[in-house]
Image 1 (cartoon, rainbow, N blue to C red):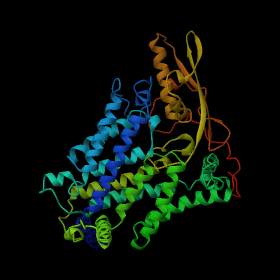
Image 2 (cartoon, helix red, strand yellow):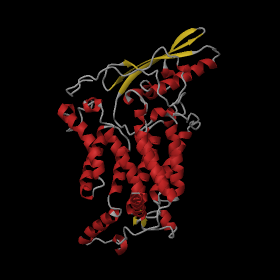
Image 3 (cartoon, rainbow, N blue to C red):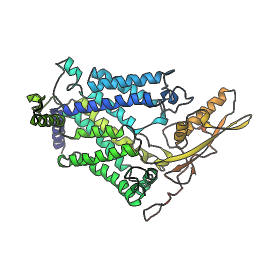
Image 4 (cartoon, rainbow, N blue to C red):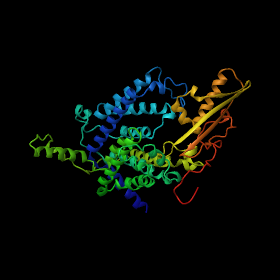
Length: 471
């Protein structure tokens, strides 16, 4: 058995080492760079970045990254401007290695500035950026290849495309798996969200119908759990892409989910034949020639050798591939290590592709007790309304702010400081329920990655479930 396994591993290493057309990888590099170039400057022009970071009194930090602070003044605008220029360099393949490495560091830095602005597509950008720093995406259709012909190569090792596609497959599968939960199967919160879009052109009336919401809720699960694996099946791939394109386009116009739809669609193209961009260009030019238009495609364009044996993938690289994919396959499952409902206690929610999965509304009033008495504290004196909306239903952020209030009062000379919070939250349309034990002194609670016993259990039932059994 060991001999058979060893043989299979060798064959798989040889498969990943094959030289295939580099056109698909080059197109993904260009799509990634262009999308981030536009998005970085959109943030500068349409959002007040200084209001988010420089002018806010308190920022919420990821555990272990409390040391990450924003630049002074309007420096955050300069950071995003540099990121936009680096993204353009990635798109053009100009000083590619320098641009992608610096972009990855800079984008991760902005991501870590404030937990309140966490978005799954930012996390996805970081993962793809790390992988793009590893793969040779600048060898073809790039200015680097033009400047240094010795770098130019029309083929790339298969693993460089396979790794990016495997990362996307993990994301898509988990996007479906996480929706197999009580609330989603009872159409919440999708029924709430679509009900707010009843005035949407043409489809608005359907958004208020239970049967159509049920079709959408269960269809999304099928799309990811069936559609994602079918992307690896050649005969089904084009039809899955048509459905994905329709799904992501509708998502873009109905919900405000940023660049996620376009980044996902570009990445999905990695499942097609590595030479698909070349074939598309060749066909377009062939069509042009039928109408007496000049054919600008060199004869060699469609003659790139595929599946040629390449240099066997090294052991360190093979270990990296295995460790990377195993890590990102296991991290989304970590919420099973905590008791309770992850949508309520948030323990294991982030970095798990739990996208568009719950809606929460809450309020939080802090009480600070000192040797001179007590005072009610309005968090909006210290944080922005958006931060407050996030914080009011996320226990870790409530704890962070409680620690901050304690430090503020100690800074004013008080010796005995206690901080409690009256936090109530509504999950997916439920009536509001107490989220945190209001008698707990937050200053005495150490922030860690363990289970927080001071978070209450979700007890409020979901209103109007459609399934015949109750919970």
